[in-house]
Image (cartoon, rainbow, N blue to C red; front, side, top):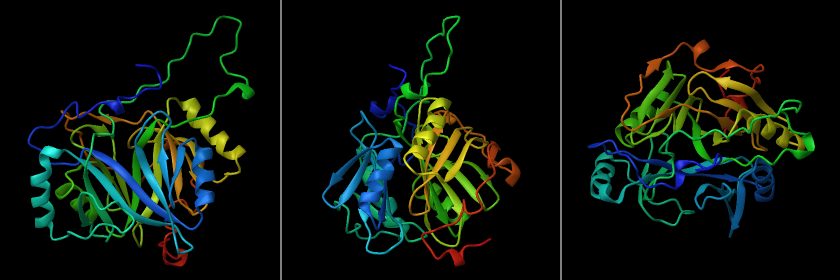
Length: 329
């Protein structure tokens, strides 16, 4: 396994027995008013952006999976359209029964291929359950190997020699919700995710019981549902910093970082997209194996956000999918 490879190409290597749960965050789907600008943004970020008809599919280089899709919106604002989750084929009868029992079954999203099982979460966002290989990681991602530096040589590369930063996989997505505890209940009781950590009713982090990063999703309190950020794994703290510089050079100067989170422990830099949400470079996030009971806790706000980093932008947790005037202070 090379320094840039992860265990993403592996099938379901391990499974928590007797637990019905999604194994992967299969895809997030948003719509934006300008696909050309979305293509520029995600391409500059380092993703393999592919046009498929009237949408963009977001790949990472060297991996066949599409981690996200961007549709053309008729409205001037970005919108979270739906979220797809990966499930095992052997569990399909149990999932049919669970979806039927939830009372939340719905028709497929009109922009989807119509496959799988569909239901709405308590915020009204469609959720797709699709039989698929596990794409969320089954082991902690590997750091880039660093070659030894001979005496008399500098360890840092020349600026002109820095390779483009290319994320390896989608680590997690943070969603806005008006009711964090209610959404935690849905994610736990219906999707089978498990609570990693939380801070009161302000934010919560959930992982997959069949092995995943510290969180597949996070939920942050807002006045309405929406997408706050997608988070993409990179191979080193240098790639976090180089990614920040890569985006500044491309004209995307707003964001937050470089810093280190408390919950999840990852190093980060967030880049603000043209519609007010973010794409995050993330390195060295905690991993929860399938056979570990993560010690979930309720953390005070000052110990739930970040260890170090620059001041947080005043509008960092503003939900721009709704009217800014409707957001809580």
